[in-house]
Image (cartoon, rainbow, N blue to C red; front, top):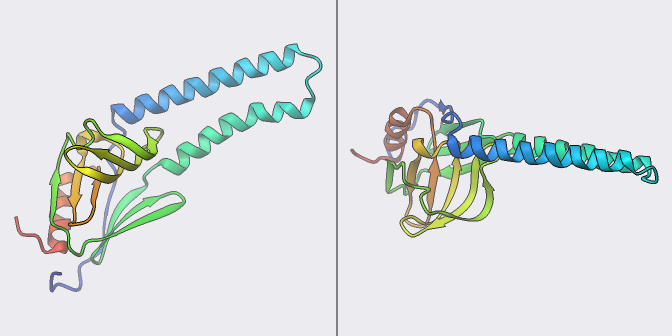
Length: 178
């Protein structure tokens, strides 16, 4: 742990949505709108459908919007010797103690299998696995801006907009020399 105890907090915006996130979001929106329109038309044609059933037509788009809002990454913050990933309804905390390496890696998500999480609606967030990184957590908006943080027992992939400033700040806080 570095001896500098009075490091100012630092905030980093996530990278703008990359192709993977934009495509997944677009496909999700098109699918939900199409399903909603088809369901509404079918329900309007059938006079025996109880009117409260029309609530279902509203629930699907509302659920998609809420999922999109909940998945968005608001920012990455370095507070003391801890990385915070701020989401709308949750903040993920990662102590920097024991951090072994922090490197940019555009190929981090290549051939990654989703174990659990969101694979593109608003962000790529959750638990993933691939041969190169093993099991890892991801909170990113653009795979082209990916940064890999490695500890002895875990790995994290994020995508700050300004990789070089972020890497410099993380390395300083974790006591990594480079």
